Amino acid sequence: MPDDPLPSNWPSSVIYTARPILSPHFPPDQLQYINRLATTPTHTIRSLPPLPLCKHPKDLVRIKLITQPEHPANGQNGLFAVRKVEGGCKVIDYVGVVHSRTLSATASSSSSANHHPYEESDYDLSLIRCMSVPPPTPSTTNPKPEPVLVDIGIDAAKHGNAARMINDYRGIAPKPNCEFRQVWDAQSGWARMEVWTIAGAAGAGGLRKGEEVLVSYGKGFWAARTS
Image (cartoon, rainbow, N blue to C red; front, top):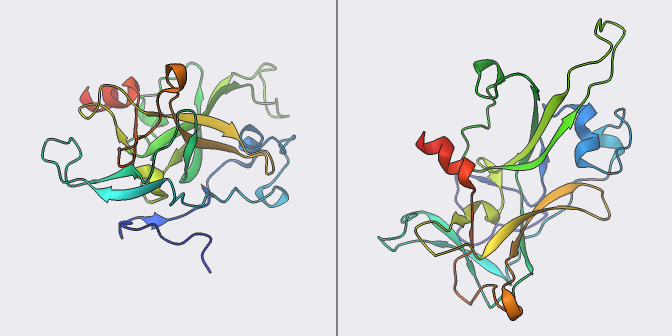
């Protein structure tokens, strides 16, 4: 039996997964950045709990084809509230392939040497970004290794869940009604990305029944696509 049945209206071109997938190219020594139980660089994926199961919240949201000509995503899917959801409530996890790259602190992230296969994906979301100093090795002549930027993301272009259907608010609403939150799974120790409704003043905010779930993709997302 699958971990979670396919949500209604799931596209056949994307593989549905209710559990994050760790890229086969993910550096083992970076597990410590995405799992709090990985206390040393020697931990392996097999020595850690499974990545958390994130079942589709069918009582909260559903996938729906957008047919309004004025909608920026007309002809594509969106995610809509099945019922009213109060502000400050979790809606859904963002699930996909967890991947990583490291960048030299002095290198340009736009250089061809630093090109990353997920950079051009419209479904790639940043999970962890931090500076790290690699430990010196016997072959290292420099006693102070150069710091590197560890850039870990979640990509749902080819594998994902219903959260990949969430659209940006621009051109649809004056402001987003939901936001991304990076949290830590208490039992397994894994970092995860969740979508929460935005709480307004005096208990306002949230989602009305039938309302589309909308977030802000961020200025960097649009800048990369308009430059």
